[in-house]
Length: 311
Image (tube, helix red, strand yellow):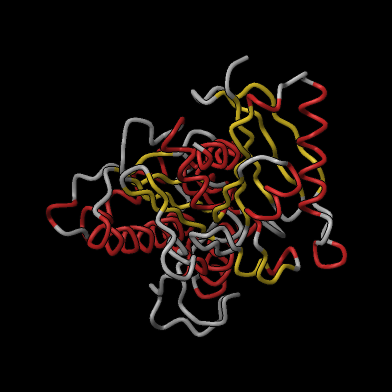
């Protein structure tokens, strides 16, 4: 079977897991529930037990296992200490040390969004590049920065928290992080719904969205694709803020490529084209040709990146 490694993507509801060849082929993937009771004290035990069960099930020789990588939903220092995961109930947790003790294998940990970016660089939309920035547009906005094929963590484990870049200077509402005007407030699935509802309340133009009691980000994009003027205004505003954010990032990082993932990215080239128009308008001239592409690994990006952490 050759040398193998495990990739673990720790989410608030489920833990996604995979076993990979060191060349990057996914041999098997599965999920277990995330047990958050008692401040998440059982999570790492459950992960270790699941890995041991998979080794027995697949008759894997422990000598062939290179290590275990894990992406977690919170800041992670370069020494593998998680600096708090609110939705798991964790404070500071030395994840690498604990996983190594419980599995007997080398362990590496990283922030989940950064790890997903690394996965895309390894086997996804960023394959062939060395420097990329990924924005994940879901319930919130996540980010990951990979330079010279290595994750940038920063001194506090907070590099790549792109969703909390301030872009809306007249915002009156607070973000979940405690400040106002974050990219996440306008560029997430939650954000575009909120901003579209504001438009529906303030503008009198007709819109198919008025016929829906509740609607989703997908509904807004579908309406925009069908030519709904109000929905187009909302999508263009989201794209403008993303273009502004990416132009700021480019001035600092100057990546080979930007990747866009997460549920909102299912809008496809319609979204990418809209972002690109604003990005070209806002970006420093040396960075204007940086491509903006869709991520390709979907929900598997995290386990791919976690496995790559080990390598």
